[in-house]
Length: 228
Image 1 (tube, rainbow, N blue to C red):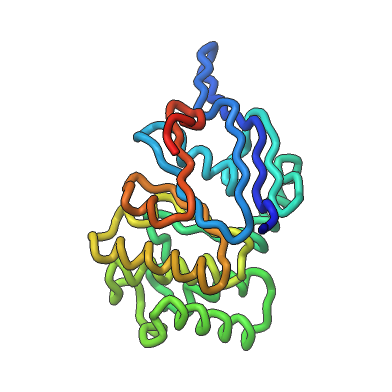
Image 2: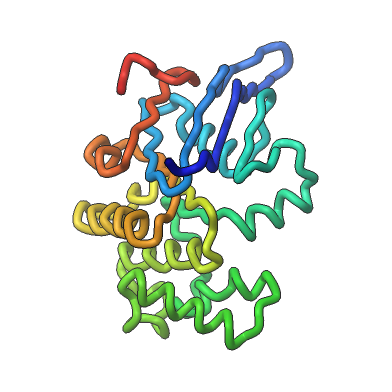
């Protein structure tokens, strides 16, 4: 059995507006194993993206604990937290967040370059990852010269180039047509199977969620135990 790579216990996220306290998450506990492909699903406004943001260190929980790879990430300082994200986590969002003035290759190697990796090494890693996502013949193209699906593949390559422990994807197909959406989910499944990539994905499409190993259902900020 694979080890638990994410362990969240009694996580709460509360937003305060004067005297009004709103629970975006309440008493949420989840464990995710290394090498698992997990989908987080629920109605709009249910808290699924909020949960991903807590697990992915993009936000701080109001209460609760989160261990990633055995480390208590809630207690990390801001600088250590930033370094942890850069070294161990990868992110894909519905907006591709590519730099338009950079080629696909440059958009991918900017991440390992930020870690101080030698040019020869970060260029080789970026080329390897672009080839793995099926863009070996598009490395020198700019984002404006790529389709939406291809741009999302560049962002996936960028997220994976540092070989993160976990890939977090927040509505990665929201801006794609149906064919590109299906291609993106197939790519996630392929990466999960071939390299054992742990993936945590938020989606509102149940047919996409069913491609994962498991669905975590969220409703009104809590785990919906009525749905399996």
